Amino acid sequence: MIAAALSPTTVNAAYLVAAVLLVLAIKSLASPRHARLGNRLGALGLVIAIVFTLTLEEVDRYAFVLSAIGVGAVVGAVGARTVRMTAMPQMVALLNGTGGGAATAIAIAEFNRIERIDGDFASDTLVAILASTVIGSITLSGSMVAFAKLQELIQGRPIVFPGQQAINASVVVGAIAVAAAAGIAEETTLLLVAAAAALAFGVLFVLPIGGADMPVVIALLNASSGLGAVSTGFVLDNNALIIGGSLVGASGTLLTLLMAKAMNRSVANVLFSAFGQVQAAGGGVRTDDGRTVRATTPEDVAVQLGFARKAIVVPGYGMAVAQAQHDVRQLADVLEQQGVEVKYAIHPVAGRMPGHMNVLLAEANVPYTQLFEMDEINPEFAQADVAIVIGANDVTNPAARSDPGSPIYGMPILDVDKAASVVVLKRSMNPGFAGIDNELYLDPKTTMLFGDAKESVLKLITAVKNS
Amino acid sequence: MSGTLIASLTVFVLAALLGYELISRVPTLLHTPLMSGTNAISGIVIVGAILVGGSSGATTFESVLCFLAIVLATINVVGGFVVTDRMLQMFKQRRPESRE
Image (cartoon, rainbow over the protein chains, first blue to last red):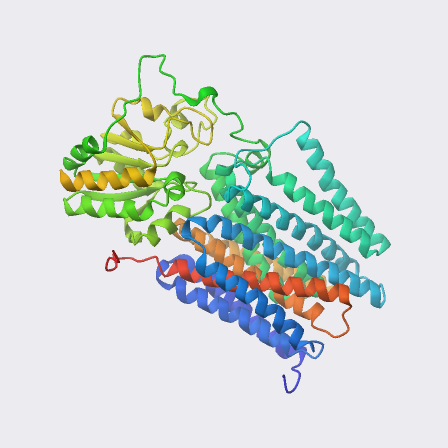
């Protein structure tokens, strides 16, 4: 297929071009305007890297390589075209896992190859192989558990058992120890055992982490899939892998820190505290101080909205679960036709992954100029006549500001309670992820519209149109 | 410590710093496409899989592993770029003509 093999120098030059294109792809994400072009440049970079690799003299099994690429391309393209936008966290979780799995498989194969040929391992190559195996395996199985939680194949709440931390610690130490032994003994079987132990650790590691902490977990697994690529690059002395992997690692790391900061918790606290495992008994809101929750009807809310000049919509995971983003947009359209100014307030950890709400609203044709980050929108709640909270809970809880005893105390929240009135669309009075009552619901200016978010919004649209 | 190791470490550290700088400029609006886009980039490990498994000297054991690695990495590359493109085309500054 390839007429003449290109020299390694030429191929390395092509890798440099590919790396530059990957950097440009990331750079272009600074603005939505050029991001799509940048993404295509990134894809071009990958194509260049793959094609030039195929021209190397030592690569001669084209049917083997191309058939594997064919299988992966079909699976990837079909998956990417059919996945629902609400399922994007699961998609990213799966892609983190496949990256990790690939790194592990390559490391084990290369270990076997060197051991088979002459067993002459350079010490840095050996360390990189062992790191690749362990990091890749943890990323693979951890991502699968994250996927299962997001897809609700297993319960989203933390899964805990006695002695969990000690067991987890011994499994990961065991995995590293066996990997080291495999390196010393130069024995592939031992490396497979190490990979199995690392896979087990990935499962154990993610099980105790709750659904609403998934933004941190997904970002962290994103980072580790990048590190897997980096260590594979060290194994093969390949700069394209090192640069590409570093970009991914940096991105995942930064997002992990941002997400943890948005919850005012350390990364360690998110990963190891099994946060949200305590579910409030009965799930009711305390009314012992005489305040009660007021339920309302779509008609009453429509009247309220009829007098409003400015409304702020606060979407949360409940909107994603109900697939209500298109209906929310329609409600905003109807309100705007009646002269109401509508803005959207997006909390950084609303949903199940970084930027989740933005993607859903973009899908529903909401222009991004209407989407506002927490710091931008918070001063505006005081001028809003109505704040409409749709399936968001903990990110609106004033206890985060005022109650030092609250588990979410110190977490930056959307200042929904500063609005003149608040309407909360909620399925039931069950507490949010943190398992705590939301003071907002007891506020005299808050009314609750109970029911599925999608149905409630549809009823609201009809009521507003008829009022 | 070998010269190639230091050269590789240099590339790694500089690329990570560059990545951190660039990514800190990505608005929260685009954090989901950032994650799926970097998913695609981590598919660069496909190069490694081709280098190790693409040679006719590879054993069956190595071939199976590398076939798997190429499939998985290609899912990353194709799935990541396609889904990112799907998302990015939805971000509009102004309201497009309503589809409903």
